[in-house]
Image (tube, each protein chain N blue to C red):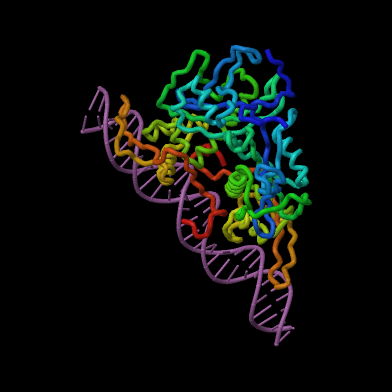
Length: 231
Length: 231
DNA sequence: CAGAGTTTTTGCCTATGAGTCGATAACCCG
DNA sequence: CGGGTTATCGACTCATAGGCAAAAACTCTG
C-alpha cells in the first residue's frame, strides 16, 4: 500500500451535487462509505480525474456508476475546493458540480446509494456537507434569474405542479398566480394547449405548460447597466 | 530535464485575471513569456499549487511577484479549466480567479509585466485569452446585482467619476442620473457630505460618495422566489 | 458684477414588472 | 342543478428604473 503524505503531488477529483425534488422535498444523491476514513458516513458521488479527460467527462464517467447520467437535465461547475486538510492523509483538490434531475424520473441507484433531503443531511464525509449546501444555494439563486426550472420539472406540467417544485427547491411558498404570470411574461413558460383533468375532489382542469427553452437562459432585469438603446 | 507526458499526474495551477480601469479603459495585468512554448506571448499571472496551501493562498503568493497583493480589493474564484490539451506537453489543470484593483492606485509592476485593454488583447498564451473574457463577463454581470463597484472605485468619488468606471467596465454608456439614484436607493452608495470643487471649466461642485459596504453584497430584485413575508 | 457657459443635482413623469385580492371559469359529486 | 373545489384571469397597488428638463452651484468673460 503506497504511503500517502501531503508531499505527494495533489490529486484532483470531481464531485457532483445531484439534486432532485422527490416527495415534495429537495433531495441529494449520496452514497455510504464502506471504508475508512469516514466509514459509514455519506459522501458525494464522483472520483479521480483521469489522465485524458476533462473534469466534466470524468464526473460523468464516475457518476454513471451511481445514476443514469442521461437523466441529468443540467450540469454546471460549482466551485473548486483546495483546503490542504480537507481530505485526511492525502492531498486532494476537488471540483464540485451541480447536477439536476427532473422530478418525473426515478433513476435506478445501487444499494449503497440513496436520496437524502438536503434539509436533514446525515453524517457527511469530508467537507461534502458544505458542498451540498453550496449547491442548494446556487440552485436557489439561479431559479430566480434563469430558467433552470426546466431541469427540475417534467417535460410538461401544470402551474400547481411547478409551484410544488419551486416550493421544495426554494424552501418557502410561492404564489401560483404570480409564478404563472411572471414566467409567462418572461417568455420562459408557454402553454401546450392541453389541459389536465382535475383530481377526485373536482375543480377546474389545469392548463399544461412547458418550458420554452431546454437550455439555460438568463433574464437580466437590471437597469443600471443596460445599454441606453437596448430594448 | 524530466520528460513530460500526459501520463504524469495532472498538476494544478492558479491563475488571476486582475482587472483595473486605467485611462478610462478596462485593463488586465499580463506578463510576457520569455520561454517556449508561447515565447513572447502574454500570459496571466499565477503558478503551481504548492503542497500545503489553498489555491487562493497559492495565487496570492505567485501574484506577489507581479503586483502588490494588498491592492486587490476583491478576489473571487472564476472557473476551473481541465481540457487535457490546454497546456502543451504537460497535463495542467487551472483554477482561474478574478481580482479587482481600485482605480486610484497604480501598482508597481516588474519589467515583463504590463496592463492591456481587455478589448484589444495581444497574442495570448495557452487559453488565457478566453479566461480574460470570462473574467470580464463575470465583472459585468456582478456590477449589476452586487456592489463589486467598490473594488473598482477609490474610497470616495463623485458620481461622474463612478460613471466613468462603470462605462469602462461595462463597455457602454450609463446615465449619471440613474446610476446615482439606483445605487443610493439600493443603499449601496452613501454621501460623505463633502463636495469636490469643479474643474477649470466651471460647473456645480459634485457631491462626494462612498460605497456603504466594503465587502460583497448582492441585491436580489427577483420576486417569484422571494418569501411572501419578506420585506 | 451681470450674464453666458458648464456641470451636477433634483423633481416629476412614464414604463415595466411584481404582489395581492377578489371575481370568474370549469370541473366533481350528490 | 347547486354546493364544493381547483384553476385562471382581471384590476388594482407598489416598487424600481429610465428620461427629460428645470434648478442649483460654480467659473469665466466682458
